[in-house]
Image (tube, rainbow, N blue to C red; front, top):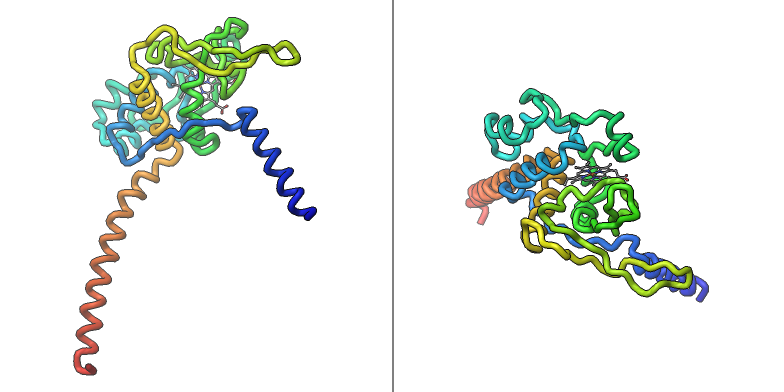
Length: 242
Ligand code: HEC
């Protein structure tokens, strides 16, 4: 009975944590087998994120090979820092500037998909809203008071928060988000753009995963052929016995 009470209490605690919005994320729906999505994600990342965030464990050359791009394509369209093809994806911004503008250096994103998970990144990029009380005018429902301004506002449009009635402390909480002024993309187009960026960051967190997946197909194929040969061999050996 006591155990049951503890179990119920545990359930209640986790239910409240969920209701408080602690981990309410949307599903990213990324597909690492979709090379076009990864290529678009790389382009979006370089255009909208690489000015502030490095990917220092990934080299341009490696990215070209994994994403099916030529050296020329990468150097012309995806490299804005003047780095060499074989070098890592560093950021041009200095820590001094970053501290002045954001109060901190934007973190390297090489491993972000592994630490936060794709669903978190996807939801985070969709959860920015205009908030005049913040230094840069932006806030985020998933990461409250984040010091990053919405990098994708031109694509998404201007998103505003909807607030509920004041609570006992007189505070009004965000109950929903709404794009009040459309951007370059409609809602589903924007979701796809964010999904592409998320997929690219997932790839960047584990570049070997792509190779492993395509290798997997050959392993299965090999095993099937091998099983067939083994079966033929078995038939041959047992022919005289039966
Ligand atoms: C103008 C600079 C700037 C741009 C552009 C920018 N970021 Fe950020 N980003 C920041 C800063 C600053 C932080 C630190 C936020 C904090 O800790 O308060 C951050 C934090 C993050 C985090 C959270 C890291 C953590 O603490 O877990 C993620 C994820 C992220 N950025 C992804 C992106 C992506 C993806 C893009 C491009 C679509 C992007 N950022 C564009 C400045 C930027």
